[in-house]
Length: 226
Image 1: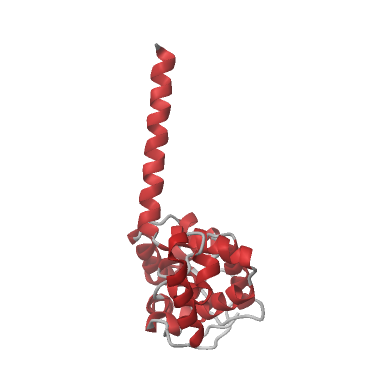
Image 2: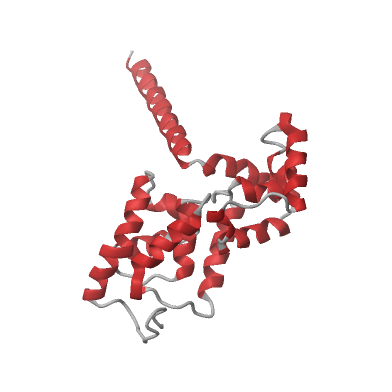
């Protein structure tokens, strides 16, 4: 492995002094951003495609990060504007950041693609616009004409991505995956993306569902005790 900044060779697990540096720098920032949105490690894994073990080890300073992993973590945290978050994580990583290997970027991209096709990864509306009819037709059945118009605008190139999204290599990768997806896959991604784009709403919905189930269990227990 080679450090991305100083280009010095490193190997194996970070030394204790470097572990402290990683944990107090990029690890602390990642944990703060994740907890600030009420995300558990497993939640961020689903939304980014980065293995939860890697996330935990990074937060505890036991792993040196790569730009590709930080990019996908930024995507999971802020898909509408990932570049500013990615820049903060890269800056916090400092010289602990290691250069990409021949396989690391492809490996992270493949995991992200699996998360996307599984419907776990958020997809911002600007990326969905070019496939609006296929992706959102089932979700918004009464908006067919508006979806068609939005799709035509996006395909004409007259709609620009927001600055925080336009420079994102992760956004470009996802756009490529969507371009090669079948209509069935696009429809499935669209249905689930609407649900996972807004993490706060998703969390609130899960909380309501847990409360409903708890009430049902309590009612069944009371009935059984009569």
